[in-house]
Amino acid sequence: MSPAVPFSQTAEDQLYWIALHLAPGLGPRRSTQLLTTFGSPQGVFRASRSELESAGLSGSVAQSLSSGCIFEEAAIQQQKMLESGADLVTVAHPYYPERLRGIYDPPVAFFVRGRLELLNAVNVAIVGTRRPSAYGMAATERISAELAEAGVCIVSGMARGIDTKAHQSALQAGGDTVAIFGSGIDVIYPVENRKLAEEIASRGLLISEFAIGSPGYPQNFPVRNRLVSGICAGVLVVEGSQHSGSSITARLAASQDREVFAVPGNITSSMSWVPNQLIKQGAKLVQEWNDVVVELPEKDRYALASRRRQQLLDLGPLPTQPKQNKSVTENTDPSISLKKRILQLLAFDKTTHLDHLMELLEGSSGSETIAVLFELELLGHVRQLPGKNFIKVWVD
Image: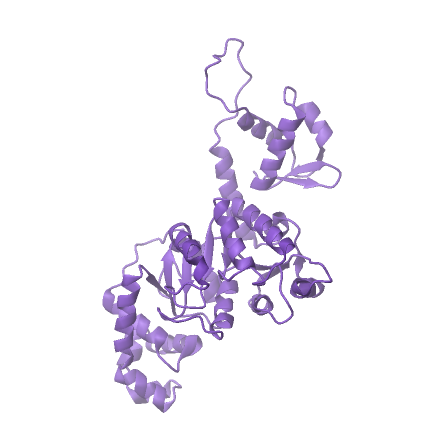
């Protein structure tokens, strides 16, 4: 989604934002309060010590801000940002995620590399353990790919295990993905994901709230996790032990009024503790991608529907009955015609059995019909119900 008007930010404006974002002793909530009081980062740094203290700052923090000593570090960060090919998204930026604005402690700024429009895509996080089972990896690969094919942008933290598999599967499916770091945006952790990070930067989006060059300190990751859930409509937990980071992300998602999903696991596996516990607490059990999509907010489901509807329209008009002397050299795709015919025959309010559908589709083989139904199910236009019954969804 492009901004309504072009966004322009001078180097000086950017410097003030970086200084406010990195100023010691503030944090997101206090920084936001200062912006409300003084109107802009420039207004904050031009305020006197007494004015800053009146706004609720301690004497030492007020003195630090009024002295302007943070600007030396801010200038260094600005140069590193340019060298690393990163950009700065502030709360004044038109691409600042609307969902993120609503959390308890949204950052006033963060660093990015890649496609800014993904900040406001239909985002769903997939998170889990760094030591997944083969089952967990298989479930992540399938669900991430299917959601990406349906138009959902997959968000994760690019950690080893489930996070990495979620990003990779989304990219392999030709979809979108966002990685949120617990280190500086130029510090790839784990190091073996350097190639993956570059691919995400070129096809998706990298995000970090931390200063450029910052190592991935352990305390950074719970802070990072609030952004993972904060920019998403929901969080899907695949595997995680009792005290894992995925449980923290799930709690944050619930506190932010996000949907929480979980893939059920083997009760004898310690890695199944978090998802199974979440399901007991009311999280949506997920067996397939559509279990996630149907629980998303209406505006997100509408966005996915519109995207898929446009893709269907791009297939071209429904072919008419073939003429007897139709040229055998004409370039046609019979699967396109079959997709259109199936969607015309299926209804929104009643199911159609597979056998009856095949009877109505004269001239098409059973294998062709099943293959196209499967493709339409992946696209989100058709859903299979028990007993080999099908129903149309999402399409006007």
